[in-house]
Image (tube, rainbow, N blue to C red; front, side, top):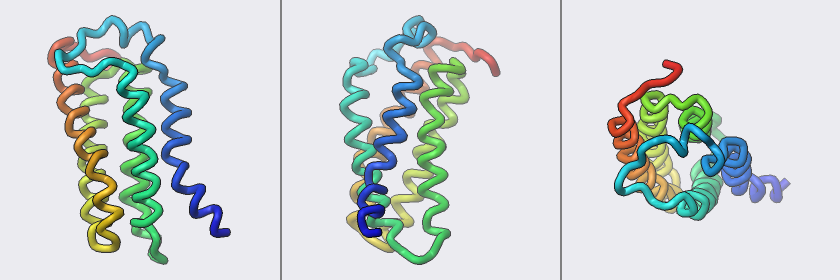
Length: 155
């Protein structure tokens, strides 16, 4: 059963990859019509950054949730589910304000998870720092794209 614990490290990466492939922004017509932020990185950067972040999240969760108490799973798992909902909401629903709310909620849950893990395993919390920094940048991008396009579709 020890191998199941190690497989759990890759679950965020696997789910993130599946969702990203389902919601491919390169072929999304609405995404390509959006006016982008001046600080928007090239699309290929996202396909480099997110797998690294998902692996760090998986390793962090492996060490941070290593406890017998089930309530320790709640905040990190909810935060990850919210994270996964961003791409389909942003690309498939084309709802910029809801996407902004989702990325801000993801950031809040990442910070809460950081604090929670800090009490159990400091390394687990430190592994979340790149994720929190990227979410801070993503929050700005999402806000900027919303303001630039000033539209709400399907809301």
